[in-house]
Length: 336
Image (tube, rainbow, N blue to C red; front, side, top):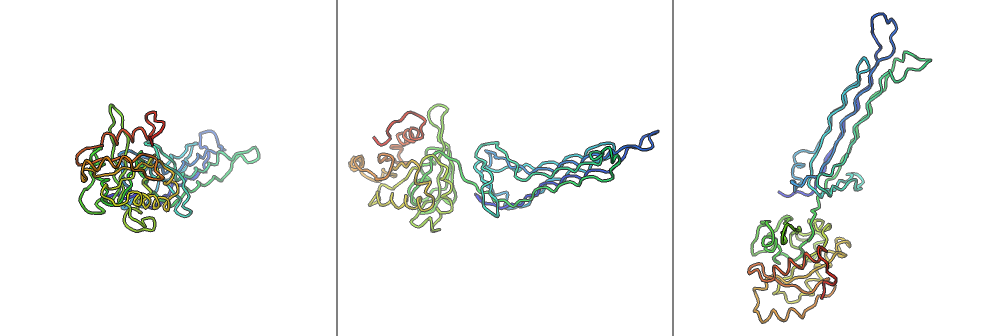
């Protein structure tokens, strides 16, 4: 199950109290202060890990508490620090304050880790408070409490290319053809119920990633359909590939609807490089294909590409074009 949102409570460990103690040595009737410092409370650390792809685990565990530091001991012995808790999350997880919704951290790289809740500092023992005028202090410092936070975990997939299109436009079939991803595929709308990430291998030892999200319908930014739940997953993509069925009566109209939904959801999405391709070209006669080369899509950053996942026609050309559009090779003008 794909879960991309969770709210969890974090409590870092409290610092241990400092000790009040005095030296008890033979032949030293009035030993000086010898109370040790308390140990530091454990931190709560979040770490990104590439093997994780969902926040499902946080449905079943929502509270995390690190261990407290031990109190200081006699003979200047400091207390042991509390163990840290390391929580692993998928790469692309954003950590927000649950009250203000302010973004605290962005775990956008594998093995990146951040301290979200800091453990409390241990209190100083009475040995730290001796002065010439007070050589036997009988007080110590208490440990400080660890930070408590309620945070939101929000997962946004990291991909080079985001697929955009109406339900049943052929996005799932395409990603299954060009990568090892195996989404559910059928001839009815909303087959894709959760985002799918695929790695496309390109020539020798090269690759790029493609994200497929549930199909977008008009009004998706207002909550209609399924796509509105997952539009955030293409916010981080480098470019967008719009898929329009070759059998559509008006390519420009379909493109304008999809683009408007993206603009309404996030102006950032509309600023990304936009490539448009006609899918399922095996459904039309070969003589009709020649007409498509003359068609243009306004407000797009590419010529009108075309392909068929069923017959592989145009697949290699599409992958080559995406590679160049990503800037992996010198490409001065994609629209020519």
